[in-house]
Image 1: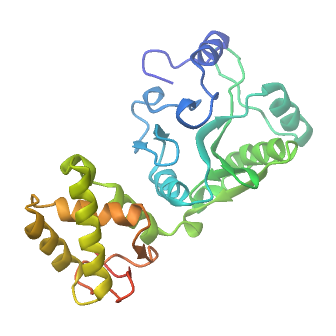
Image 2: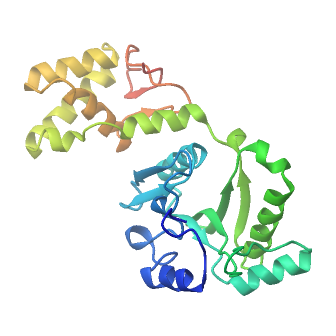
Image 3: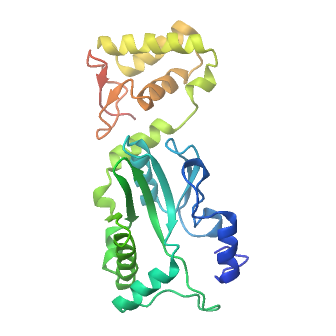
Length: 269
């Protein structure tokens, strides 16, 4: 909770519901837990998602890395973080059946709303994922809360799993983060016809296999009078649009040549 009011109670619960937290889909979804609720809670991030078009609230670096993978995947139709186990009575009943102490606020005695880190919508249905460092899984209290989550989602026919750093490709996540960083090419070059010309020219250079990526970038910038950095923004945009195929499980290298078929992978620095 925020520094101004850390106590969790029924009034705050009702306030969250009124604010629409835990409700909506895509751009209209509001996470139950938001960054401003924990002003000193370590490393947190606000990242705009490609899938949803809204800002996501991520509570750890591990959640951020996993989010990048979800947001890049064509299988993700919606990504809802900090999703509440809103049927509190069901969660409490699960805890009671398992002999688990359900969490209540020490001051008010009101039950907390547990959350699952991600609820993902795919063409096959829903998938719930709890993201935890592997070292935390040895803690009894962590395991108890995860068991409540597991049973809650199982009762609803939703696939639930734990994701640790062992299931997250750090290289792929960092590549995606890099591809999403910096200015967007369409903001740097607002002329649509010029954008198309730059795209076609870059792809032709890239597909020939005679140029390194950085050489193709500089060639396009010079040919079309683009500002420094615009060619890099173009390169990133073409990968994001998947018009250039890149193996994101390898670090992207700007000094490697195109393969001659428009495909390329390597290392960036």
